[in-house]
Image 1 (tube, rainbow, N blue to C red):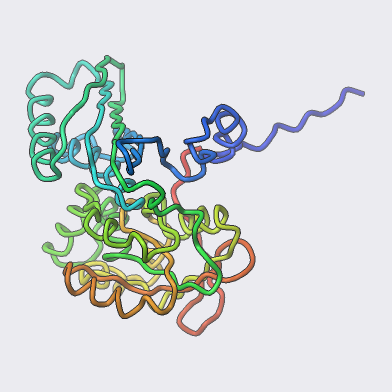
Image 2: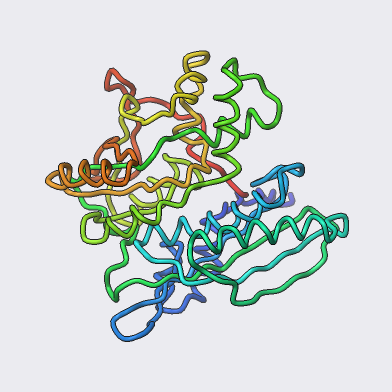
Length: 331
């Protein structure tokens, strides 16, 4: 009888990285578990290196304005620099575009980059431009600077520390639903706010830099709160607990959840928030409150770090909640 071969389960994004690419990593790459590399810079400084790509139909919609696509591309990378506490320095750009994306589209795309270069005080160092039959694929390699040894790593979370997030959660996930035509049953102004949050992230660079020396572990929320906390917990060798009653929601997201409470899953696993998720000792709470007021940016305690592994999500009554999707999966 012939042996029956059972196909291997897909490794997934992080399984692929661990098996095929981590063995190739340079020491400065932090084992490919922290989303950045740290290399020596000028005396007393390090360069922080980060690259992210966005793909048409996955991270942006075909009819999104080219300027906003450019700014989202740049900002998702700047968000990772913010999560280390770094100051942006410059970037490289790769565009793989279908021939249907002509000079007019590219002119508007470049105008969006120019606007954000001025906003964040950075410039383009170079890159590459190629054609593709589609979809459009865009990539930035961002470079930041930080004092040597001061970068906040996702491996720094400690048992007994509180978990915090900046801003509000679930806006972008609800925004992409609305942008695709689903009626969320909310006011037009709230719908527009949510779509804007999907199209145009706000990298928390000022907050990230101010958290150096305060936060023990940090990363930005790109795949989804539960999934990204899982990455931080694994890198730190701890467990994370999220209290859903504490999740910070915008007025627009709260309106959408009032129409359908199941939409809380957008705040837990929707992704694309690009807010900062970090741990800090309890005694930092007053300092963080003052920082939130100074920056006019909510900083909300949403749970805790404890001994163990994985992530638990608790409902308002303190019971463990099943999360339908912890976050976006590429594979």
